[in-house]
Length: 162
Image (cartoon, rainbow, N blue to C red; front, side):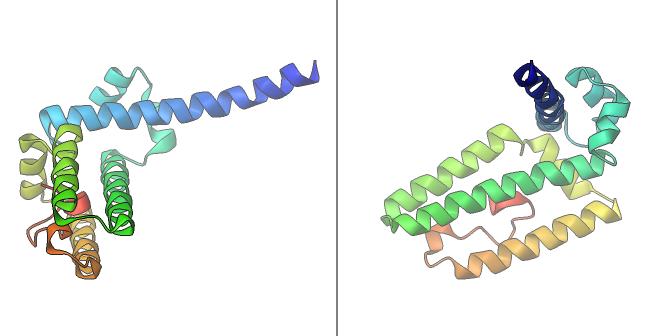
């Protein structure tokens, strides 16, 4: 009986993490398909089959969700770059890995609509976020030993892949 109680205690945590991930995955897909500006919290909730209360339990708003998604993407790309550096691979392997990361980024988030919205953004909170992200990418690019793995200067979004 105690084991069943302990299993049931863990259930809300599992479901909670699942709902939060569902919201993030749904938003990522909608942002990629329609751009950030065209997607509302309501449409994210409808597509994710969660209430607004559930959405706001995890995120203070759409900007916070967007920032989390982009930060997650950036961290994943950074980890891939660091693994690439640790392998001390050939120039060809490095270039192929960078192009694969770029392709993956476009497929997951960075559609033309999404990038256009980021370029046209007038929200000061997001502008500050993307400026700080861009500066972090530039600093990180300086430590990369090979030009093939350096994000371009025009990178204005997570991971410097575009």
